[in-house]
Image (tube, rainbow, N blue to C red; front, side, top):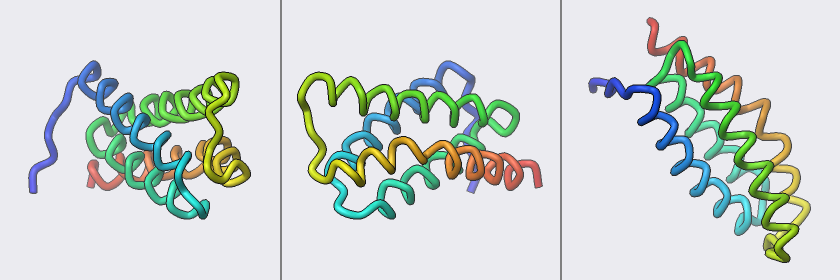
Length: 109
């Protein structure tokens, strides 16, 4: 299977789309493993489509997730499981960067 070559603005649009999906998953998830699994999967995609700039995409995803959590919290929109949501959104930086690196490494092989 051939990996598509997306330019950077297209990749940014993909990050926004994936982050919106991730925010929904974080807010409905009962256990922390599901949001972190999707964080890993989406970040591997970032590394595959942008092997040299995948870390920027992963950083943008983390910023969107954390900002969206706090914006929704300020608006009064509560997650179904608040402790899971806050943990999954704030700890996502670690799996996001690691998976983005692995995706870029796999693409370069």
